[in-house]
Image (cartoon, rainbow, N blue to C red; front, side, top):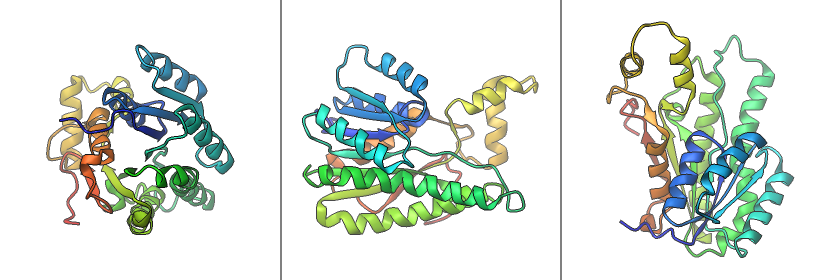
Length: 263
């Protein structure tokens, strides 16, 4: 199916690796123009060099989503590069903080909340004028099933994720009059490299498939394995598509069945 993304311009934060990079690749495959930013200049350069093979539809730049001025500057340059147009936004920048309550400091809470909320609000503020003019604008906030199913060992991240899910619902209502759809993709355990590194450091004697199957069983993942970055990217790109023009204010779980809630 043609998703109708050819020649549309999409901004992807955290686009230099993992899910962000997979999303950039999927969008390019659909014929879209992509502006991708990340904090690591070397990683971004390597990703851009690889993806630019055969295409001039990629614009990259170093940007920290917590810096509103930097986000605004990158967004303006990206839009100008593609003729003043921006049709969609993927808010993907983020990380998890593995700390339980007794180890989480006030700084941990502050940093986690700042990253998660700035990672949505700063790109939105910069992109909104362009999205309003698009006529078929969409935003996807990359979140986690932690938003609905918190883990105490990830207490700051779980709380921040829940806040972003709530914010996304509010934004869907607030921005509908601008013609901007807002949806979320909530992730389970996705192998974006960290799990491969953990496997390499483990002396269990298992091969990788058996090793991840053990993890999946321990975490209650119905499909019995970790997810892949491209599987998340497909869900993101689908929600960005004009074919999904009547979908807003919802979330899709890409978690292999680990989500046990009914909401």
